Image (tube, rainbow, N blue to C red; front, side, top):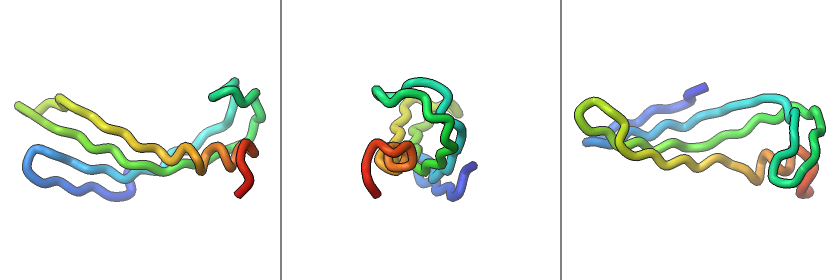
Length: 72
């Protein structure tokens, strides 16, 4: 889900939330079946109406905490 969108010049910033179930090994953590929700930020650079660069910063610490890998 896109929570916020900000655009200026050739850049667009999206703040997002995503969720799902942990159905397989991820970063060494065996499948837990737990539902997780993460948030993050995309920064996109556009040229000629196309995305030419993309940076993504998901909150993986939040997800790892929800999977029980780190204490809250």
